[in-house]
Structures are given as C-alpha cells and as structure tokens.
Length: 311
Image 1 (cartoon, rainbow, N blue to C red):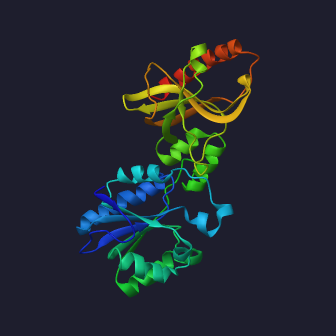
Image 2: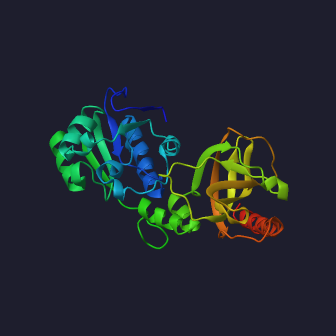
Image 3: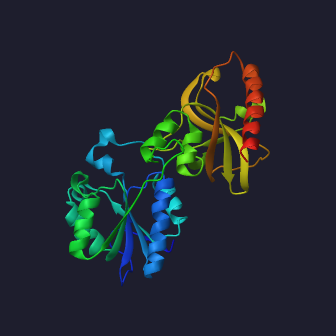
C-alpha cells in the first residue's frame, strides 16, 4: 500500500479505480474484490483506492443493530495494507454522511474527491441513504457520469453459501473457528498489548501472557480454552489461551490469558496477535489449584496435538 489518507487528501491527478465498503474482517470475498481492484488499476495505469468507513455505519444509523467487529480499525487497515492497493481512504461515518443520497455520494465523494474512473463493487453492494445505491443505480450513474462499474460475483464457502461477514460472525460466536477461518482465509485473531496479571499461573507451572481486554466492539469467541498461535516480536509460538472468568480462584472478571509454549520472556507493553486454531474445552471450576494444574497439563497435550496437526 502506497499510503493511507483521510477524506480530502489523496494525490490523484488522472483518476483512480475505486471500491467502497466497510470491509469488516477483510474476508475471502473482500480479498477477491481487492485483487480485482489492483489488477484493473494496473491495466488502466491508475492508482487503486479503497474507500472505507469508521465507525461501522450501523453504529450511527442503527446502534442497536450494529454488529460486533471482526476487525477493529487498526486490524482492518493492516489487512488492507497487505492487499497491494495503492491507497486506503478512511471516511469518518457521520449522520451527515449517512444522509447522502447515492447520487450525491458518487458526485461529491467518489468523483470530486477521488476522480473515480471505474468503480468495483460486490454483487450485494449498496450505499447512500437506505443503501439505495445498488448495482443498478450505480450502473445508471456510471453511464450518465462517464465511469465504468464492475460488479463482482460472490465467493462461496464449501457449503455453497456466499461468504459474508455476518456468516463469519455467527461461526465465531458459536465457537466454530474452522468455519470462520475458511471464510476469512486465515485464522480468526485478536491483537492487543501485554499487561501485568496477578502472576498466579507461574505458581502452578503455567505462566501466562495477559492481554489487555479488547474494546467491546471486538467479537470474541465463547469463554473457554483454545489452542492458539502467538505472534510475538521474536516469532510465532504455539500456546493455549483461556478467555473468561477463573472460577477456581473466585475471579469473575473476563480475562484473556495465554500460556506460550517453548518460550519465555518479558513482553509487558508489547503488542501481540493471537490466532485461534481450535477450541479445547469450556470454562470449568476445579476444587483446588492442584486439580486445575492437572487439567492444564491435559489441555497442553491436546493443544499441542491440534497445533501439530494444523502446522
């Protein structure tokens, strides 16, 4: 990615090939749009521009219906940067922008700001007030304003259903991480900063890396123990992660704690990424710490086996 920009500042002189969307998750369907965007821009000798929004439009239009996010703002930008696009333009989504008719959005944003020469959208795309800017409206506007419109077909999962952010959210919320990873094209992950815990884990032989709890907008899998891959500055390591309370010690606070296999160090203040591979078990209370330690030993065997089978 050459750069990112706000609403007003892209250095585009001769026009651009543009796509518009929320792109939550940057899943396989999104990735197909991005690959085609880059290819079409290269053919035309123009920059490729992704126009996206922050916050999620539903947080402004209908907050009660706003979904938990697969990718927070920085996570989404990181994924978009890996796609090879020239620019990502993040538009602050406000009530004023939500009120734009599709025609006004095309004229004032896509044409005047980004000098759009071609627009790529997915088959179910819609923008403008009430999502009235569907593919037929866009084609009509393109014919009138002189820009091309390319509508891409859906990408399907193995079960034949179109891949969507909604379907991936449903899989994660149900703990079906394999289905989520198939839709995303990668394991589902959370990122955050390592913070201090109470150091109880090291007293039973399982020290943990404690992650600052992500914002509530970030979707988390159900509470339980998971096999994960931990992306640290020193490289990638296997591990087992617990999300949820710690009933054995009477702690009802929802925490994210990861025991990293075959690595040790002081990672406080470090930003890390945790990639979910498989769910090992649900949250369970134990009569004492020794019983917990014995269960963690069994969890480690199972998590290592899962990681070895999926490496």
